[in-house]
Image 1: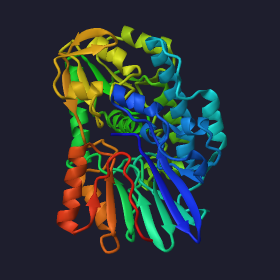
Image 2 (image 1 turned 45 degrees about the vertical axis):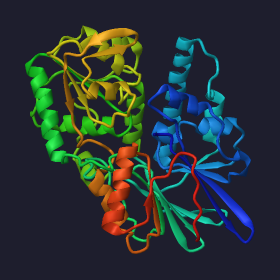
Image 3 (image 1 turned 30 degrees about the vertical axis):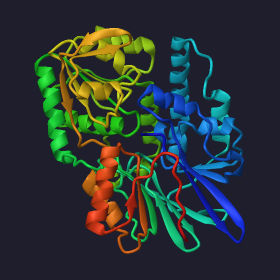
Image 4 (image 1 turned 90 degrees about the horizontal axis):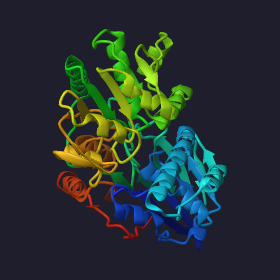
Amino acid sequence: MTGANYLLEGEKGGKKTSLIIDCGFFQGSRISEEKNKEPFPFNISSVDAVLITHAHIDHIGRIPKLVKDDYKGKIFSTIPTKEFSEIMLEDSLGILMKENKRNGKQDLIYDENDIRKAMSQWEAVDYHQEFSVGDFKIVFKDAGHILGSAIIELEFNGKKIVFSGDLGNPPNPLLKNTEKITDADYMVVESTYGDREHEHLGDANLKLERVIEDTIQKRGVLMIPVFSIERTQKILFEINDFVEHGRIPKVPIFLDSPLAIKATNIYKKNQKYFNESAKNIIRSGDELFNFPGLKMTPTVEESKAINEVPAPKIILAGSGMSNGGRIVHHEMRYLSDSKNALLLIGYQAAGSLGRYIQDGAKTANILGETVAIRAKIENISGYSSHPDTNELFDFVHNSEDTLKKVFVVQGEPKSSLFFVQKLRDNLGIDAVMPKYGESYEFEV
């Protein structure tokens, strides 16, 4: 289940410090939507600070609700995370408003004023810039998941507690690799792909090239549901390389997502966080997100005009799990034609339309219409922004000599339990999969 939200409390000399790490939306089902409206299971007035690992909505979605419920303290993240969070929260509010209108409801979880108030309480810090809240010393380290994503390292009474957030999947064409942590005492680690291995990035690139070529040869439409931050920019980077080197025919390529367009502009603005390889490409004069054939369509009119452009063509649109956004309009229009293809390049949560299609459905209900699925459905796991089971294991393994306990979170039960057992069997580490609402005490 998504909806990352952790309360960490430390007491020293009779003084208690309370921190919230992440405050995200539950996603994937109607039950999840109702959970987002529930009161927080802790005393908001006692919270001293909120720490954010990265700007995906399952890690930031309820921050405005926290502020609406009278949280008055500071919110800390890296600079790109703050910039991404503002556009992500605004986009999320737009989706919530549309859903309320469609369902005849009035009860918004938060409004524009709550977002503005949250941003006024938000303080951006850079990687390795140490700061303190109460008796906690805090450092953000590069997680390599999306631009600005952070591993949160906290020191309390000489012991180190690490929250992984979401980690990266190396090698990344744009970002630096996940930083190593070698001396954690306690670790809260993600497990999205705790039971699976990814294909190599080189294999993923070849598969992407093949899918594009096959669809163009059939004079079809290639639809790629994309997550606005990271996955979009990664795919644009690879297609740019294909176009620049003549590896694919020139066809119209549409980035049909206002949010992804805004996010791409934030990438352009924060190139200092790129890895050296990407920086060298930029120094050579190559604009990574501007190449022949690419058209960005921020307005509704421009999006609708894509339908008038004859195939073959490529459409990248949100959302990444087909839970909403413009991709569902393209899926409704093009999924029923066998010349077309749908390429799934990211994790599809249980209960999402993307997962339903991925699992082999022959028809789908999209925007109230029953749509036959005759298009070719392709999957590429090598573009995942999450590590696979081996990368996750290595991340934990680096602190083998100091670790006392590992909390495995943010994965479906099958994935999390597999990874728990892997850590127990191979490292002899006390690893557990906490249930929602459980609390643990440990000595520091």
